[in-house]
Image 1: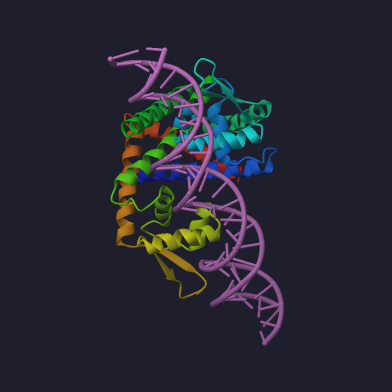
Image 2: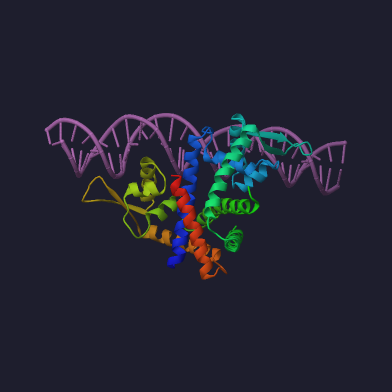
Length: 146
Length: 146
DNA sequence: CTCATTTATTTTGATAATCAAAGTATGAAA
DNA sequence: TTTCATACTTTGATTATCAAAATAAATGAG
């Protein structure tokens, strides 16, 4: 592997491992210690904004429907997430966050904002364009491989 | 969250989830279908090059010693990894890859190289400097939070 | 309208990965 | 030596996960 490419690759691999681990630790020390990192990412995917269908969320998280059901059961029991049965189509479950869920969502979002702010420290506006281009490249690559 | 920051954040979150999922699928279709993605990342951390101590690898992967032991047991049984007991200090286990393990390592590396190549498509040399700077920023941020 | 088919979710049963804590073996130091 | 520290392994329990079967609701062909 070309040296520069290898450096960037190793850096990305390290970063992703570390982010998960740090998030897990911060979570354990926070008021939300009844959640695992997977729970947190499920809450993040559900979001405060839409009322997504269960199947949409499963797809985004690359989980089977059955696994999502049990995730939602857990999060509903702990009062982070609520099921809303659709009245148009009574097979469909839409998902929303409770007050506690929204608190968690904002806390997690704040951590990510800090992270991205530091990522972009001393990066000029036109340089940000470069980064956005590279991320788009990567997303296209991944789309081709799905 | 500021719009640009949110876009970059969402992109990174999506990319991370997708990479894991794609790697998992590629693995299942490859000649290495007896491995899970966690196995693959353990092989990647062990590397072809050094003879790292078990405890070093555990640390890099953020696994407890016990979990690493069982990972190594699994990978040794499947003939990807070998234990080498250090003769200086007979408590220490050093880890190496078998021929099959090195094959797997190279295959995984090739996928990552393709990924990074596409990430850097149309990115000029001086723009790469920007990306390296941003990644260093992020690594520093993560180090502060460990 | 009614039965067959499709769709959305849930349930079930089994398996992987993980951790904390206790155990074992070796080395280092007093 | 005896004691303490270090490196790894074992044990027992828990959690997340999947595939496949089950349920329940909507849709569509006749």
